Amino acid sequence: MTNPSDMPDDPRDRARMDAEADRLRKAWETPRGWRYWSAVNNTEIGVWYTVTAFVFFLFAGVLALLVRTQLAVPDNDFVSAGLYNQLFTLHGTMMMFLFAVPIFEAVAILILPQMLGARDLPFPRLSAFGYWCFLIGGVFVGGSIFFNAAPDGGWFMYPPLTTDPELSGIGADIWMLGLSFIEVASIAAAVELIVGVLKCRPPGMRINLMPLYCWYMLIVAGMILFAFPPLIAGDILFEMERLLDWPFFDPARGGDPILWQHLFWIFGHPEVYIVFLPAIALLAMIVPTFAQRPIVGYGWIVLAAVGTGFLSFGLWAHHMFTTGLPAISLGFFSAASEAVAIPTGVQIFVFIATLLAGRVIFSVPMLYATGALAIFVFGGLTGVMVAIAPFDWQVHDSHFVVAHLHYTLIGGMFFPLIAGLYYFYPFVRGYMLSARLGKWAFWLMFSGFNIAFLPMHFTGLRGMPRRVFTYPDNLGWDWLNLVSTIGAYIMAAGVLVLCFDIFRPKKAHERAGRNPWNAGTLEWVAGDPEEPGASAPCRRSPAAIRCGTRRTSSGTSTRAATSCPMPRRASARRW
Image 1 (cartoon, rainbow, N blue to C red):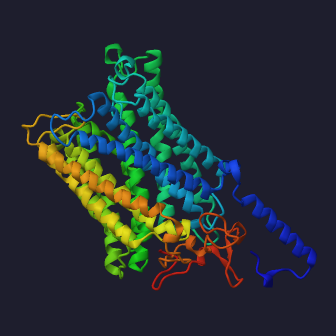
Image 2 (spheres, rainbow, N blue to C red):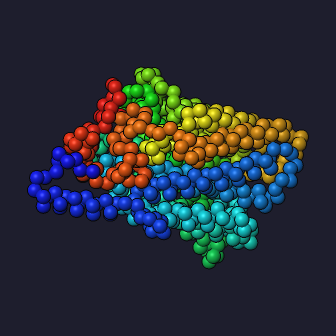
Image 3 (cartoon, rainbow, N blue to C red):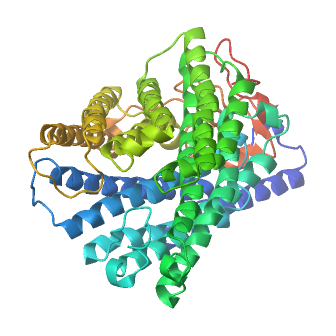
């Protein structure tokens, strides 16, 4: 809305400005009816992306509960061996490809323009194209379980079991085709984010003054552009072997199955950090807000994030220590795997220093952030252990590795994501989630997770391999597996509490103010999304932004980069 005091005196100029504002409003309003699904506004696409990825997460979680139920007692016949293989394969595939990476791209599409003071990302139709590719690929892969056609070779699809159509059936083809759509969606989002961060910043926001979230998403998007092409190339070779019988991975005809492992893991291990760094980005927004001070060591954490992204491409073969790699390769990749702990540790210490230097408010987002740091540090310690080749030889493909994987991903990705959900929910929806239910959900998920996955370290050290569908009762694994299953259901109860809180009617929630957390970044400047004239999601009125300037409630025009309401002791430079 234009302030009356700023209207020109000439009636013709006033009419021209009103007509311009009306055209702008019509261009940016959300389509209605069936045309709603043709929307390309970043807030609409971001909400669709987020909701879709969360639905895939819930579905993958149900699959995980079925797997844990099968393993609860020895000699169980809850599901058949074939169905069990489909369950754990689809669980891993959906968590890694349909939830972990897409959910952070979705959050970035949703909040990054507002954080930069922009109306939208530079290529909104590319965002829409990426979303529909993601949805098609996800439905194609996830729906296969209902037709007994799901992939059953593990989420990494190692040959030769998966390259032989007689052994793997149509499931491997479904996996490959669905992943092709998902990979295109990820690369499209990466291009969008890179150009958005580099070209859509407001006047005065130099690259060394950007919010840390923008830095992290720029790094992650660059990593996606380098990590996904090897997997795409591997998918093409894989499908050519299956359909055309070309022997890329068949050693009997001159191929090499290890080639697939290299192509997969040169994508797969950077993907761990593609998932981890956006989660750290959310913590980088949450921790300073609730510590009530700017981040300690802005430059150090940016350099650490860049270093993490760079080193992540040099340690993929630590997944392959048991494949007979040369000794010099073992030494190099083991050293690289140890070295990546240095920039990762710098980021953790920056958060600890910020908390120690500030006056911490333990709200629900901060509670999840603290739990994330605790779980991830424990997972990082076991990661240093498996980076040592002789130790890895002992625990490779055991439940110890399963426990390590989940400690790093749940602590390094899931808990920060939920912290971000509670933190940004007032910004997106205009009202608060329940603090009481949020704490219940946290303690159920935190305790349930540790009850579920801590015993897996011991089952792994006792020799229990991963991907086994049952086991005898005289190996000492039975009671540990039962405890893990109980913990999984406790964690699921916490997720249900979270879902109940999210889907409660609006009247059950407390309305949020303009900036309920007293945060210091640009996205919180805009008005209430429930106010008349505001765009539907994300408290954004299109006419309120004029190329890097913002019209305040008093009618004064301010630079977008300096208009953030800063908490005491904070500054725009290092927030």
